[in-house]
Amino acid sequence: MKALPERLAALLWPRRCPFCGALLPPNAPEGCLCPACVPEAKRLSHDPPRLPETEHDFYALSGAASAFYYADTVRHAILLCKGHGHPWYARELADLVAVRVFGAEAASRPGRRPDYTAPGGLRPYTLIVPVPPRRPGTGTLPGLLAKRLSRVLGIPTASPLRTTRKMQPQKDLDLAERLRNTKDAYACRPGTDLSGQRVLLVDDIITTGATVSACALALLQGGAVSVFAVSVAANEELPPDKRLPKKGRAQEKQSK
Image 1 (cartoon, rainbow, N blue to C red):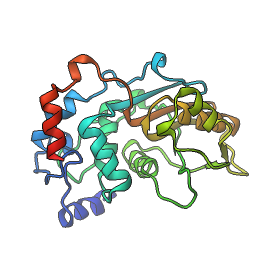
Image 2: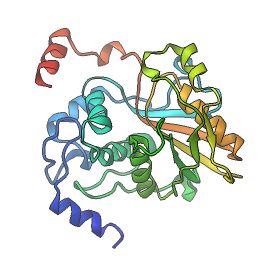
Image 3: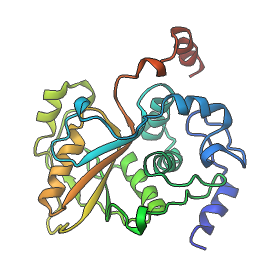
């Protein structure tokens, strides 16, 4: 009964593949992808999902994981969801994270939720927290992802984090600059008590780890006992076996 509104919504507004925008057939792979995009999703999968600490700076995290590499069609899907008027793709992206990172059973058809059973009956996290927007009052992809993951994983969500000052965009900064840019830039809201909480921190992309680590530090200062970060994609160098031939990259750019 709880999922009935979602099923009705799926009938009124059919779900689309977040990678290419095609309508999802009733037998869509993983309940999220069109058959044509399955090879691309497989190619860009981050296997295993756990992110290597040698490529990131996780100074306040117990670890981090991502479902995909931030490249090609995955990058395109995230950008569409973030700033180009397709926020509804967050649901499919979150479901893919639930399946590929947490081992949930994929939905049987579009519009339904993946089925998650906690290992041993004990959920490894007690609270889901999204990375907050850099500008207060604006919606963010991490917030949409956290809301959906909360429903799928059966873990409550909260937004205790806030920014304490203005930051530069991270995309043009190197690691040292990113760490300085985010240092003490996040804090828990007054009155926050996270005592005993095992937090799952949600972001859309993890690059150096500076943002999620700064958020994790604030959560630990708020009483959390541990913080693990998860994202749709990790901005790492693609392994050689996952790179497109030059001709393939040119054709992909033309198709977009």
